[in-house]
Image (cartoon, rainbow, N blue to C red; front, side, top):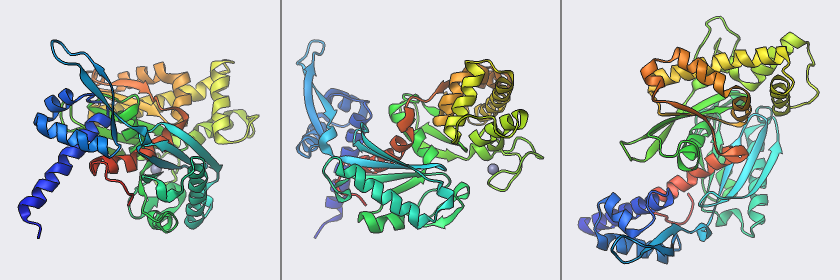
Length: 401
Ligand SMILES: [Zn+2]
């Protein structure tokens, strides 16, 4: 019979293991001495836990570094070979499925162009399953061999999805995918997941209170807060795009009027340009290509109409960011997502200037406004952090679901 004391000792052991593994995974520590000094655990406990992590293939010894007046310290690193995770990014215009090793190095990606709001959720789930089968086949495994699958959605994640931009209300996406995968995926808001990825691997590393903005057709956000100085960040969804900037403004996809998204969303920007230039001002098709063309016309060709539309966009973006700065006092504001990357190319100095004009000066001084660093895989990478976060919290216990 398991006594209460035995159970508590075992729980404590897994708790210590999760803590030390996370410190190594996030690059906070690289050797046993660092682990001891930052965790406060005894050298004997560190030694036992690290031996277990090495025996289980999660961590390896990787050379050594000299230490002042002491023996060389062997360097520890997380081993990518431990396994694979998949990140699924459900956006309005495409489903992206990325395969990563568990240290989040990209291995393979499949992109399917699909107007996700126009197809039933069951079909979206079927397409995701077929792309997961395709990316896992490239490394000779089946989905059952994955450490986990994360799915980033617009809207609220969990057991059922509420995503007004997809027309989804209480869609049991995790359940639809579980039947095909054999285990439950982790489903959460895509902007929240991206915020976690920017903290772990991107432009928000080392931040204590970062806001990550996900700009595309919509405008989402995440607030990532460390527990205290040097503490680990937790991320929360911010429905920033649905904050109201004009009571009588255009009707938003959420049903309200004058949301920020109706001014800074990619389709809204393109519509403003079309209104000044006639109905078919673009040589290209597709919202990504057209926003690229618009930025090109403004920056390369200095076309006045394109410049005016982007200046207006910078005004709303800067004002929206100043509201966030005044509300949550971030030390970092990261502008991410495909549209965020394009708009930063053309507008970053203007956005900073306008945010400075509207934010309280002592709060603006705390905040650095920077472009995201994760590139075109940011959506899938963000989603892939979801199963990794669960794995780290479980001390690296294998087996999804
Ligand atoms: Zn709205």
